[in-house]
Length: 474
Image 1 (cartoon, helix red, strand yellow):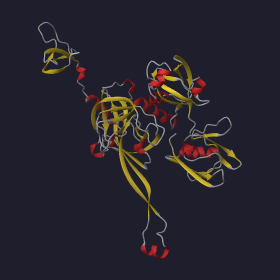
Image 2 (tube, rainbow, N blue to C red; image 1 turned 135 degrees about the vertical axis):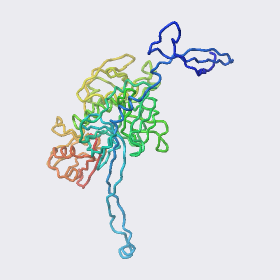
Image 3 (cartoon, one colour; image 1 turned 30 degrees about the horizontal axis):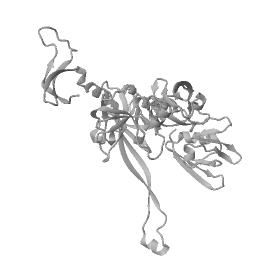
Image 4 (cartoon, helix red, strand yellow; image 1 turned 180 degrees about the vertical axis):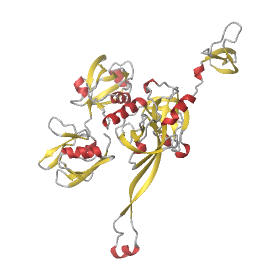
């Protein structure tokens, strides 16, 4: 095939400007491009350019900017310090007990108004551990906000201000975003000085995930864009040309901490489900399939006679889980959940996250080279729900607690958040967040009221005093 290149002639002609016809307003423009092959031979070619190829962001920007807010947070923390007294050290040989003093630090981010009565979505990492949250609207009015709920797994948080008649952004269907589609990022990239900044870019990739170095449970299927985004944009809006919300800006990849061409947003379809749960239930009702999985490798594709590397390979199926009940088996390759095509483990996580416990879905797996359609009814995670199990114990962050002759006891620590924090079978719970507990329901009630973390104190199965703590993210 001959190699060559195009040169676009500077003049742009409006097609139809002849004596032989009438030009319609919707008629595309034409540019004359000159193609030059590797031998230097040139030939002109005509390229049609639709009016829509020239994006006009004015409506999207003006419509969306009033619904994006500046979020200022204050975090108080205790700092330890040592008094260095030479006389004390001379007589007593040490420097005494460490002292503590309260310190304050401030941070900022952005948020998006999603309801006219003051509900605002932002990032969990923006408001995490905040003792005070202030929201400033685009009209410079400032309100104090309260946290309605957070979901660290998706880095989404919902806060609320006491206001009415606010401008809002409508959720778009982020699944319909296309690679190369224009988007706007709106937020406060460098703090209060640059509030309501608007930048433009294209969708560079979809379904991105990031390295998870600390092993926390994450659900990630980021929209990657090249719109300029800096740390203060966290929690701000990513909108399409129609001014609809397609994502919440969340992260950048940078060696300097500043924008370098790659920014990431949580898709609106994930955000919408999370905030709906937080408003309706006060916590995220997350469906659970009950499998461990890995990407399909070339070896797996060959062994299983697969037409492509799409899908996820099922490594294990948890006994008694929704997957087990549906008939999914180890070695199956799962390729579809209802109408959602599954190509990667991230795809499956996102697909399952759209459902609530008790919802049903049709799942397609490939087994021994043949497709099988299975019906699955999703289960839920039992963390901090207070659900009474069959044996009368109560579910508590992946564990089961109950009343024994020793008091409120961890019947089974399980393998969830409580166990990961150090909770063990036989541990007798005496205090939760410094409050005395007498029965399992006391533990549930105190945990539900906790804003950030849960500290459990008591006696181990061996009779020693002990404690453990974990962050609250139901």
